[in-house]
Image 1 (cartoon, rainbow, N blue to C red):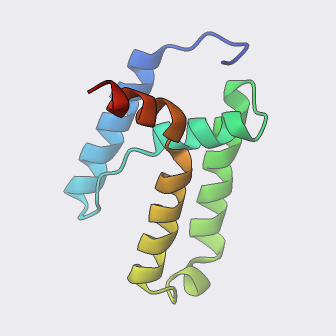
Image 2: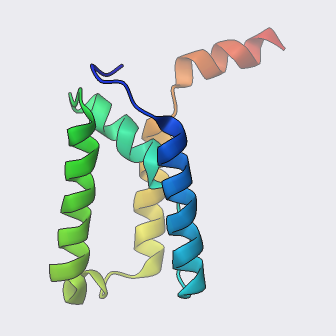
Length: 101
């Protein structure tokens, strides 16, 4: 999909270390890799820079917009998450696979 080679093992190790560190500090482990990459590709990103910039943007939101973001109810964030999950699913291949069985 992209024009650059990537070392996926490094990415997964980094994600694991980040999840471990977050868990030790009372945070919740997440895997932002898949949906960030998929969203970046769908929006036209063709290099690893697009995913990096998405991370920088998220860091800025967490750092500077925290007071406003903290007011959003957890249930609302779950709705947004389910919306993104619904849109990430490729329905046509899934239906074709299910019809085989």
